[in-house]
Image (cartoon, one colour):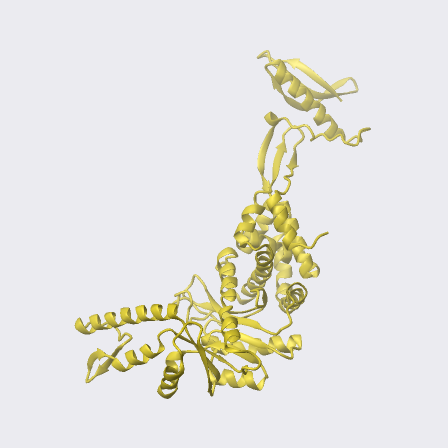
Length: 494
């Protein structure tokens, strides 16, 4: 092959790559036309590179690369990829023991963290951002198998928590949330129910989640949308204990989980509990007793034996001011409703007497006794866990709220693209795996997953198309110092 330069009718210099065969000249590639000496020099180099790449002849010089020298005039930028982010997440997945799971499932988890989207859109993003190709056919083939991996994934996550967070099953935090759908039609799985997102007219599902005291997720369960949240805690806890052969166990949950039936089942199963108390449901006799006994000073608490276990009541001046403000606001609203009757439903601090709406003085007096007081039920006696420890444990329940926020906001868990039970369950499994990785990053690095992503997205590999060779070239970026410091906290040293 030779480089040929010929003059064109416009007096430009056309650069061609030719070869001669049987006394005939064959033009293999037209490189371009130059109108100046500098342009001609660029085209001559481009022709040489094209020949090297076309011939695929091994060079005597190992470092020689036809794409090593790029001419920007003959290149175009085609996008960026996040190989560094992918590599770090894959290393974390290896730590979790996810390597024996289907590669497609792990890749869907990666892209869920980076840019949440529908499953089919995620397949496109995997190719765009990571250069990884998965066919739709492959996704539909393995999807039913992945749903069966829930227990295996949870076992791996629990083992990871034992190794990395010294989790010994002594205490877990439990709560539920709802995820609604963009439809008004129910089915056997998606049901209308009490919505935590004020979407009571739309069908939903109920998600139960368990986390460690650090806020690290260890198990989850999915229920129909019309399931009462108080009915979820017993089957979830019992299944978790049975699968992990747990002997001593304490669950922390909010007041919605408390009922005499639940307390009885927890006690029969030798499960310790710390749950919030609905103080408004206390009998007048018990309330009077608490009102007389409690010392209304910050940090003071009392313990009373009840049929639901020990009731611990603590006082806070900050809570008192908040409760007093709310009570006065509701009383004023009640007075306005009484002064200007309308079709408005009966509100708090009002009652009907002789078909006439009036202020409920008895409820006001009861509410005044509860100002600044918060209650907690437990079956742990004072020798095992004192009042202060019980209260501190309950206040750590906010960590499960943080996990829900990450799941709903950063990972966009709400399954708006799914309508059938199997795809919904696969979607929740993917989101749970993404949540475990995200929370591990947050806990170890001490930053939010959003800040981690902001830093990770700075490390991009530029994709440039070399028009002279027809091949794409990757220009890799080195990790920033800050990112190296973050990763060193998350991953063990090599």
